[in-house]
Length: 205
Length: 336
Image (cartoon, rainbow over all chains, first blue to last red; front, side, top):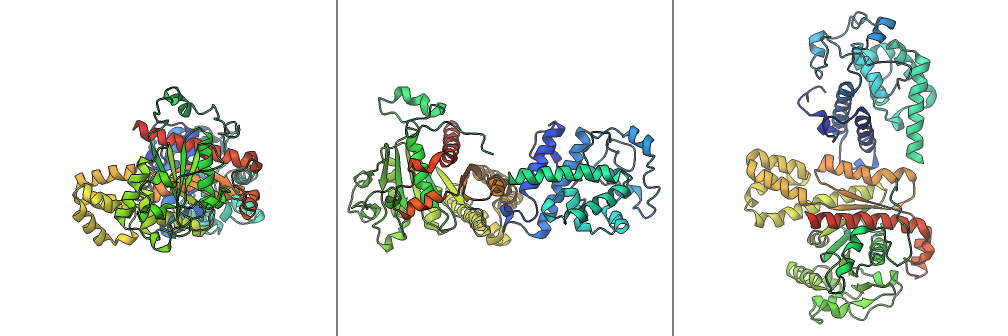
């Protein structure tokens, strides 16, 4: 899953280098919608494995660019408030050198920098992923600790809404996940649900 | 979705299309509004409203003051005359193919729509459904000589090379799909078939036949996408790979999504365009959608012309968007 370090994330999202954070987000959302698992437009074109690789590439490019365009500050405020101490509470985490195979974050830290979290932060799937990575957690570790299935977590982070479970279950997933990330579960859920509903109504209006 | 909603005065020019207006000044001397353009409409599947779309689009282009000839190339089962609400013409394409008519213009019949005429295929005997390649080329040469601005060819269903050949020989090929898995699958199949057929034509132009065949054999041609073929060829011969990539970039089919009933499917066209570029390596330009209109089917059933004003503004708006983007593509190519 972490092979393609050479790929130009701008190119993957079909953008010119230097596009703004909102352009990055729009491009990603457009592609993610078009290439979402099970999309009619993909019928007969792609198998599950290719689908997974494709979505991983998109997400990887998105996350890389999101870091480059917005959340590249080390997130001092966040750290002071909540004292995260990454990796300290994850004894089963992979050793730091492995993790640095991720795209080079502009930080001496072994984990990617924590994105800025403030009042206006929108807890999108991608944002949760950024925070998870900043906390030095792999998907695997989250699965082990939350008992949420890997696929569900991936869909949750990718915002593949049509594959996610009913609201009650989803709420449980999101809040459990938020708590593990030491975020305010209620706030994260409210934000996540807002995005979901906006996307759903955009798709049906 | 549809941010482009030009005004819609019926039949007369819209006035909102700069480039169809610009050349009007030198119209008297029979210069062309556009270089003579042939637009073919095809798609992998039958029963997806291709013919009705071909008629509607031809009417839309005529409305923009282009002289349009609609050519019924569904050589197996042509019936455009009935969609236009006119009697079956006494002569048809088969007369030309069988050399009973020397000129295509003899076969041209006027319709009730100003600037729009029809060349019928309705009387084609079945054997004409599979014309020889030379016959196709002769037909195409004759089509190019017709005095008109735009020819709209309505092709038959399927991915048979006859259909694909007309699709490729035209200046612009429009693929029609409807929001159903079978249709989407057929559309991609059509694209791949068209690409392979088109590669064969390339062979003779660039002496790269052997290499392509070699690669195709090694990589199991049936499964390979155009993008994969280009990169496989590039690995063996970078120069030929570059030529091929260049040629692939000129293969630019267009897409219309027809019979849209569900608002969720309004994004299908753009998604297919993205998927085609990403996964097939084919630049599939999305022209727009036409929603499902019950009145349209009632008109067909009642043998009324399918372009009547009673269809109302939404239908007209759908077509106006498609017409505008199509002409933009035509002009873009003209500049290139």
